[in-house]
Image 1: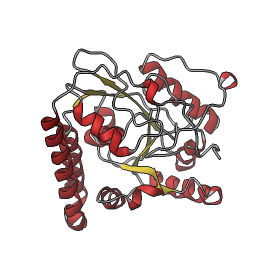
Image 2 (image 1 turned 60 degrees about the vertical axis):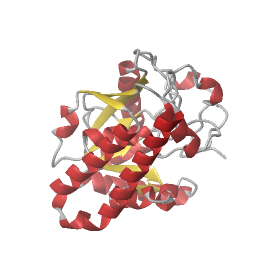
Image 3 (image 1 turned 90 degrees about the vertical axis):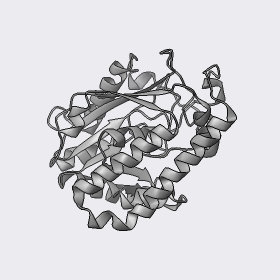
Image 4 (image 1 turned 120 degrees about the vertical axis):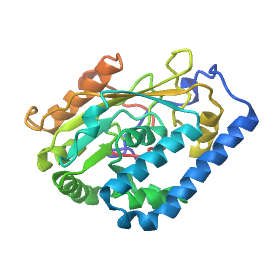
Length: 291
């Protein structure tokens, strides 16, 4: 059953336009092979991470995520990126809209950081080992009893000076619309005394059209989505790093969540729907990161 920690999305195959320019099968296969190579190299690098210091780990992580995006032919277009790069030594909750498994690669290509993710990812082949080594805070969304403790741990991580990437929608949307930013994760920012950095993500094709093709939605598997992305030609992922929301600007976590959601929606040209007008919708199955 869906609850506030396991939100739902109406997005599915009908959200996919399907008219984007594509590359041939040989090129797509080469991209998949290249991406697998990047993941294998990153997994082999895990044992040396403790030996190369924080600067070395950050450079390695940034290189891995840039290489992964290049392997899939994704061009990164960043505005306001200095806002993330200048945050050394001070913690912040980095909150984005959630469209694709490419989201976390894009944010970490700008500035490597820790993440809040569902615990299932820990068991993924190759990638799970890399994600765990990066200091990911894992969340068991099916165990409501464990969630306050996880949020307490997240507050400690933020207080220690780390940036932590979260997707407050809790599940993926197609990009043409978005979900409500769940407020519970914002309590960790308040308790940690750190600001929230909103980041808006959008995908475009080579001709500038917004596209839903990279979305990971509905009943498809992660492999279905990866294969579709590998076929896309001229994909651009826009990363809009927005102004921080200071911890004292909101009276409570609900107001803080609303401020951050409105900032992201404004950057994407969306209207923020008042909570009382939202209606329950049918469930989508998956989310890489959660809030």
